[in-house]
Image (cartoon, rainbow, N blue to C red; front, top):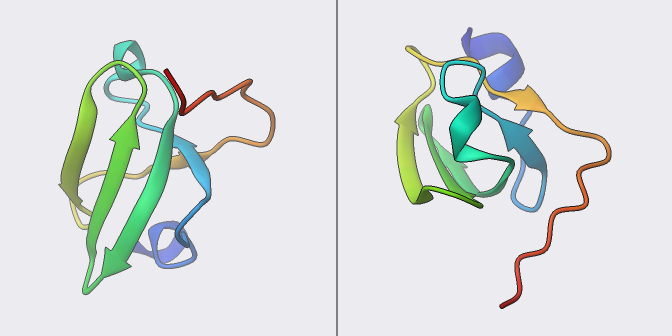
Length: 66
């Protein structure tokens, strides 16, 4: 799980396959295996990269504005 997560950088769009209802999220930080993501439907979450494998999203229509 950690291999792909290590490549995630701030600004990248991702999806959590365990919680698709959260929608797409934008990576805020990735430090020491802790990944902070702002999900469209769930808000800001800090995830442990050892327990979740986030999937990069190439085209999402993500709108972070109001």
